[in-house]
Length: 46
Image (cartoon, rainbow, N blue to C red; front, side, top):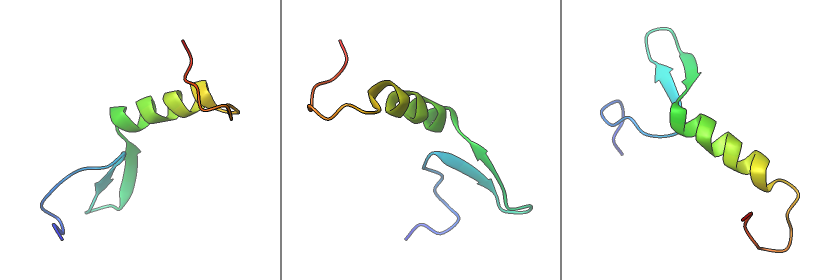
């Protein structure tokens, strides 16, 4: 376990205030999920 050393994930946490902020990677992931929402055929959008 990395504890407080490594920073990774989709959300940044300010340990002093416990405030969470979505990172750019989290925004991109949300966009990707929206683009593929409802698809059940296993194909990706062209």
